[in-house]
Image (spheres, rainbow, N blue to C red):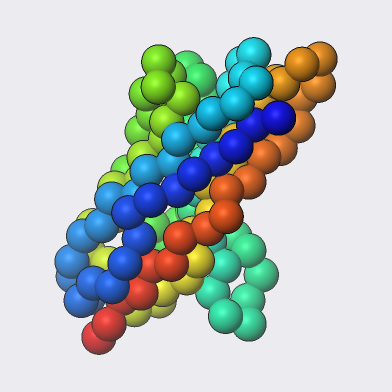
Length: 119
């Protein structure tokens, strides 16, 4: 099994910044993609950004140019630097990884961290 633990959420004013971290641990053989998703109240979970083990990134249009995803493969950790935050970025942010544990590749999810942006 693989466990993902997020940290770094909180309350910030519009225009401010936050940095989220997510560390993977457990019986990890290999991790391919890692990413961040978010879910606002009453809305479906949506992709924010993903990054492959080789460093290729993908962003939602709504965060392009404001958020930056990065990872430290040696630490099995992914980061999300969020700048110029807007009230519409308010959501629970979930870390995700596509990882090999034992003989099986599967999706793993963190417990989520709340990000609240006040206007």
